[in-house]
Image (cartoon, rainbow over all chains, first blue to last red; front, side, top):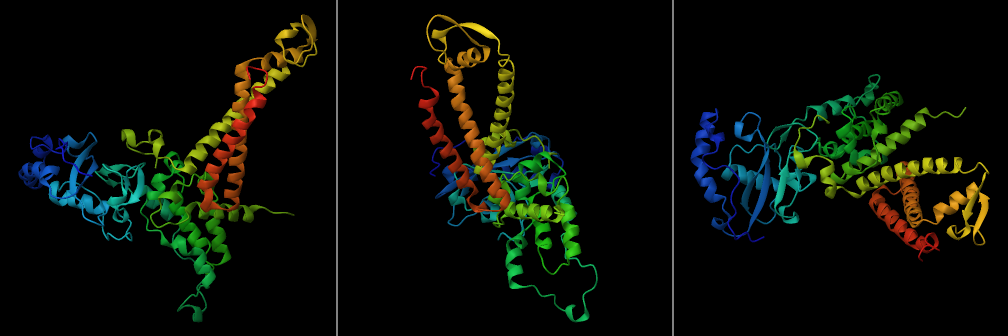
Length: 290
Length: 151
């Protein structure tokens, strides 16, 4: 971990054409900060343990960043530091143009799924200490990169909405049930894991099938369908309606059980298991022995 | 999500070092499946051209399945099969065929279990078990398959 030999910084030299860009006020600050960057990011000037992170940079609107590259940042290490803490430090101390989504910092909002050291992970629950250095932080694969670590999530959300991720009922329940629709403990246990999805998109990004088939619902959406299809409070007709959605060509049958989604899910949802269970439900619904 | 922007090394197959067990199982299953199909058609081609019953003259010393010495007349089938079996490369390919078939069978059973929802949390271990078992069976078969050709 000791990074004694000074390493040439690939991140912005003050002469970088990026700083002659259009966004004047920010660029002014950056330009003046450019000299500071060079020294502050030099590991020899930082006291104590540092970690080297290599962060993917790309911005179609800035000429110097149109060609994707990796920028190195030396970040002082503190115990319990997460990958998100590291990129936040890099942004706050070295380069304010470094762009990424993050919000709650506690694995609830699902904003900061990145591709860290070759795996889709939630940056806020990825411990730096557990990663091999240098740490490569990239945007999620198989999604359009908007800027730096920010990817276009529209397609993911479209797929999520395609499975109608909300509670449905054919008719209004009886007046005494309106206040509270109770669920049995067993049924709650059954759908418990599937309710944990935070829509981070890590599973969809890891899925080889979703990468090749744009119409595939993907693990997250199918898991969402599972969450409602298995909920006893929804009537049988609605469950059949849900199964009709997932049993289509680009639904559950696309899954090739590679287990990539299950492996990367930051909330430990057994996605493949849920997809497989919906496959069996779909078969049971359609097989008739008469 | 195939509208992926070209990020060079980030793209799929160059990331093979980062593949997980389930991914390797999938790739090997596809690969062995195609190998078996290839073998099937080669097999049909060889047999269908060797079953005419026509007698051909061969040197008995060349063929492991023909008795005696010197030139002798045997059915085309014996001559073809004996000719193939006398080649070391064919014997090695047979070992490979066994390995491919055994893995495909074992992983097929694993996939059946996965489809039935049994032991999904042990899917990586069952893949490694298939690999190890395939290795053991393949190594154990070597003396049998290579008997008579240098062993």
